[in-house]
Amino acid sequence: MQIFIVISTLIAGITLSTQSAVNGSFSKKAGTLESAFLTFITGGFILFIITLFFGHDSFLEFFHAPKWQLAAVWFGVGYLFLTIVAIPKIGVISANISAVIGQLTMGMVIDHFGWF
Image 1: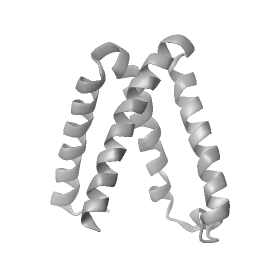
Image 2: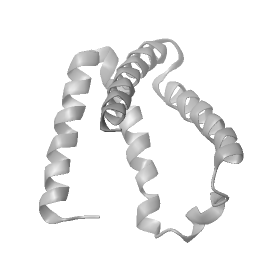
Image 3: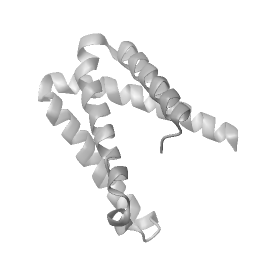
Image 4: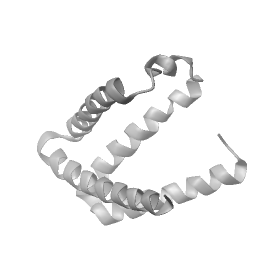
């Protein structure tokens, strides 16, 4: 089972780099905000359909979640927007290495202080 999770994570990384590169290229033609919007609206629609068929009948439970947990959506939006801005200027490798360094740094801070 662990090997499946490792392979899934590897595939996720591959798709993330590919998506970043395509969005960076697309943003040159359509704009940064438009590229981010298209990504989120398409992903949101697909996840909505999947949730309708395979969800656990708790679709509206997010209304009962603590409000600070709902702030996580802004981190995803910020990540996508900032990578779309960075890719055309510094390239996929530099942007992804910077993102990984940021993830590792914040992960160490979160683990050290026991946040969340």
